[in-house]
Image (cartoon, rainbow, N blue to C red; front, side):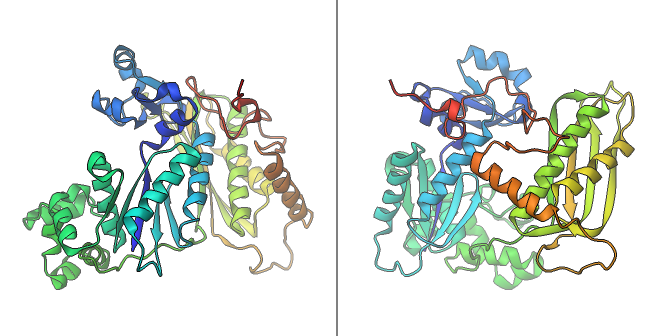
Amino acid sequence: MYALVDCNNFYASCERAFNPALRNKPIAILSNNDGCVISRSDEAKALKLPMGAPIFKWDSFCKANNILVFSSNYPLYGDMSSRIMKILEQFTPDIEIYSIDESFLEFKGFENHDFKDYGNQIRTRVLKWTGIPTCVGIAPTKALSKVANKIARKFPEQTKGVYVIDSDEKRIKALKWITLEDVWGIGRGLQKRLKAKGCKTAYDFTQLPDDWVRKSFSITAWKLKKDLEGISKIKLDEVEAKRAIATTRSFEYTYSDIDNIKERISTFATSCAEKLRKQGSSCHVIYVVLSSDKHKKDLQQHRASRVVNLPYPTDSSLIISQEAVQSVSHIFKKGIKYKRAGVIVMGLVPTNNHQLQMFEHENPKHKPLMYTIDKLNEKYANYKVKLGSQDLKRTWKMRQERLSPRYTTNINDIIVVK
């Protein structure tokens, strides 16, 4: 059996966990730089605040309807997500973290368990230990656990947040209820083609001949069909090393001076290098991109990129940052107001197993230096040790005018009980 554990309105729930006065009130969370709505509480959804709404257009609507709007507090959300995932690991060792707010769990050797009760235990423990409400869907396959989770979320009064598909009768009833648009793994292209065959629900999809599905679509679509039939074909994903690592961000304001842009690129490059070291990889290629604000049509537009091929693989923040900063100096144009930049490292190889060069190699002092920096930053957090080319006060410069305290990641924001 598989379970999908999904946090309800995760970002809004994180805000409520530390501020009980927000409960039962409409809440909206904004994207980077306070751009658009990316998360809403059920109360905000009931008021018809759309997902993706640009806040500058909907600000008056939010004020008129008493919708409380917050900047994205990613350090808080990330820490709360990590705590929840550690709790889920107590229920089974087989877990796939699917996103920041949901995970698949596989139950091997649980044949005699009462899964309804087990789902309630999961939900109760997460709520008690973190204050985050969840819904749990349990079924014989991953795809069906997604369906079960939607039922638990849609009908909270009847399901109490937990629904188990443990019979063919329940499976067929659920598949006849859920539309193609709501089936996990069926995108717009596949929806269009299935509707042309007369399919409206997930059940209709399962009634198509296997051979025709494999021939007309793909092996992935066929696996999804079998999963919906209760035959497990989609397994838990194993964690694999990334083939490329990217750090791209929009600036809090537009920049037209090279110094500010160099500082941002240095920070992005350092982030990529840290991620390389974390997964034990080194890169051969650095790709730097810089672009103006495409939404401001009245301003002169410019988008450029540059590729750097390194003579040897490296995971050193010093080298990657230096090369990235030099690259952005070449593509920068005076008079342009830049809004976004990014650094991508590619051509990844294992750090402890790659082809050595005879005449060119990395300074041997970099490895112990990077190790020491990582350990210090891990111990003291908030990136206390940085390169001289970075802003020593901030890592990510974003407009966050409605930011809540970082209750669990900043000692100065910890709640004081009086």
